[in-house]
Amino acid sequence: GNSVTQMEGPVTLSEEAFLTINCTYTATGYPSLFWYVQYPGEGLQLLLKATKADDKGSNKGFEATYRKETTSFHLEKGSVQVSDSAVYFCALPYGSSNTGKLIFGQGTTLQVKP
Amino acid sequence: KAGVTQTPRYLIKTRGQQVTLSCSPISGHRSVSWYQQTPGQGLQFLFEYFSETQRNKGNFPGRFSGRQFSNSRSEMNVSTLELGDSALYLCASSITGGTSYEQYFGPGTRLTVT
Image (cartoon, rainbow over all chains, first blue to last red; front, side):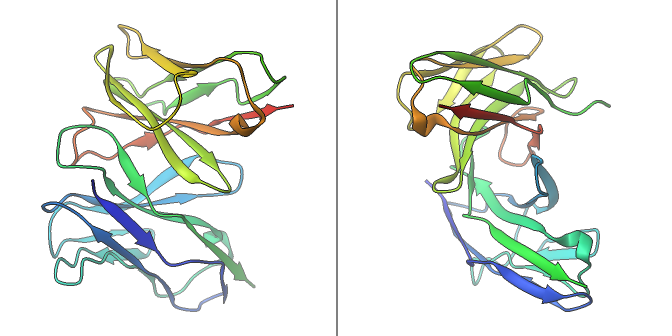
């Protein structure tokens, strides 16, 4: 099945700093790719997605581009806020069949200091 | 539209007991997946149900089981609880569970086994 590797955290940044969280994947074909965010004490929220190569997903100032050449889907934000402090997960479907099994990276904790 | 709801939110059980967790998906969603989240293992897929049938299963022992009802609501059951079953159990729903469709997560049930 497919797999995903995510940069380890924690990542500590000052407010308004630039954020990059690396995510690389191994997959059969070109599956959709996702970034989820988990705020303290909550479940996961879909942050953004990309469904095909060269697609750019964006939401709340976050962006990620589906790069098939480098098999990457790095998450970026130009200016982080304290409210962005959370755990971020890169994810993709386990296989190419039509099922709901997602494979998640290990998660990257982001802490933004004022 | 109401989101995914999970009940109960918190649960404390004793080793050897059994527990049932409930998940109500977003209206119109027919796929429900369950995940276990622990600090050591991260997010691990338990199983997926679609139209009352288990469509996919993760690598968990038979003590973990689930079912889905005709209204798409799902339950998971863990029998003979072990200390290692302490975790956040997340339910996610999707329209069909296909690889292009994102999953929407509930807030989770925090299970503590003592």
